[in-house]
Image (cartoon, one colour):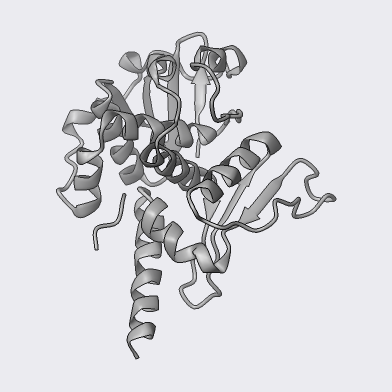
Length: 248
């Protein structure tokens, strides 16, 4: 079955259903990006990164403009945006996820660059213009909502790294209204979720989390899924193990 397919300083913002267009986002964003991507030392156009034609990359290439934009809006929860240079920076140690983002940027007609931040650090940056944010339509269709949730999960979601551990799907965010909106979005798609709660007031009174209910984990893994290579593999492996147990 075909399944859909962290920056050093991050900015968190609320995305609400039915809100107007997005220029207001740029008024609340960070000025600490490194500047114009064209002038970054060691930067390279994404056209020469050599993506392999695997299934995940094929899904990214096939994503429509609206789905690509919705995913990137979800992924913006862990990005840095420069109001001065009007650029967006996504950072990860896993450059393959950034190469996937580059495909989605290209789907929007956006150029982007991937470069290593520092000679010794295992941190890669994808940088692109932020002008596409203001051009995105509201996330209204089910397909867009699934893509938005996928981007949100790929930056703010968690699953066990140990295949032998009890499986869970969690999403975490400091903006209460924003994560409550995501929870309502998932439940509107028929994916049941647990209570939105603060894991520990003593550790961080502003951190909020909810789990996808056990009965909806399969629906989340199949419908929302992931476009992050590691998380996608973990979800697919869990689905394969679950399906194998059901056949016994």
